Amino acid sequence: MESTKNLELIPTKFSSVYNVSLDLGFEVRHIGQVDFAGQGTFLTHRKPKHIFSNHGGNQGSLGINYSLLTDESIPFQWIVIDYANHKLVTSRLYFLTHGKCFKFANQGFELQCFLPITSFGLNRAREFEDSLTIQGNLFERAS
Image 1 (cartoon, rainbow, N blue to C red):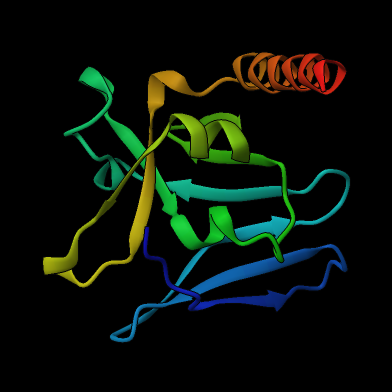
Image 2 (image 1 turned 180 degrees about the vertical axis):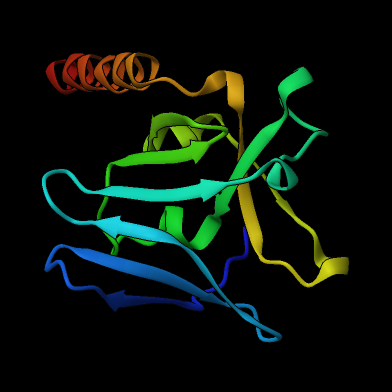
């Protein structure tokens, strides 16, 4: 999958928090913040106009820049999206594993990964990541 590396981390007054900006070529957008404290969290806000309605059933999906999700030099485990006065929480790995990627090339946008709103949830993400840890240990014993 293609991606762009047009991301820039801009320091804030808080030592662990950086604004994330994306250069699309025709404009620069602020896409959220990364807080590197603890396991790291990407925080962003979305409005109803950001809903991708062709994926995820009746409630649609929310997207995040694919490069941000896959760039290992920007370490964060958790994602929090503030949408309609709710905090939608998931993990980066859950988002990448269960999301679907699209690029709206005709509009000049970057590759994004979309997760249905109904798939968010801290418990769901933790259970998924815990299942991978358990499976990983089983495979390690087998070798």
